[in-house]
Length: 265
Image 1 (cartoon, rainbow, N blue to C red):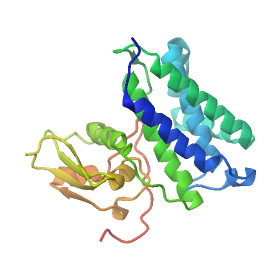
Image 2: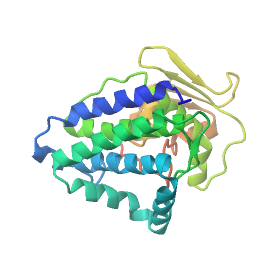
Image 3: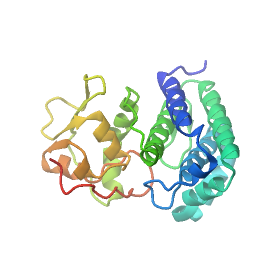
Image 4: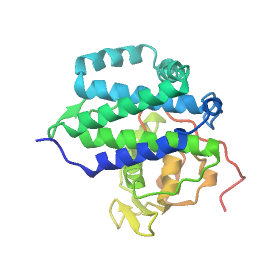
């Protein structure tokens, strides 16, 4: 039987929100520089379309994805940027249509998968839910770049729970890609959700803790804000270190935004 998971609906909602930001843009606006150095709005959407296509290969054509994986390993430093650059060269209307078609095909493919299946990916193998969650996280993160460029403030939603959960679960990975051993003990993470409720992760009696808003944690975990520009509190030296290197995505350490002010306060 096909897997049923709410994250697929949340992924559709997240992509629809970003689509609404770019659908009516004039062609010239697609060339506006975003906070990601060297990336325009077109690069942001092209990257999402490019990654959706790789995810679709992983789900439906594992042998073709294996070839993509080998190609990525051969020149990983430029692999992602090359894909974004190629897509960004397309006319905006064609790029938008490509992104829409690819994400729709991926959503349909994920929805049709049997329970328990796992797909090879650039990081650890992915289940249907984890693949959808990863796509949601990346769509939200790149959507933040677009929103910042357009001067739009997006209202945070309950969909941030998926992003926060990835950030928490990737704690040990974040330490490892920075060449540091993962802490032996679990952390307690308490985040205020957009509706004012509390999202909690980890044992309630953990000595090391992180508290703050879900939005700030997610912005930090996808490296869209500098630590000095978010209101998160760490209790314990390892928890404090984690907030300086947290990341919710696979791959090498992500660059953090430069601070917009001297210190949190």
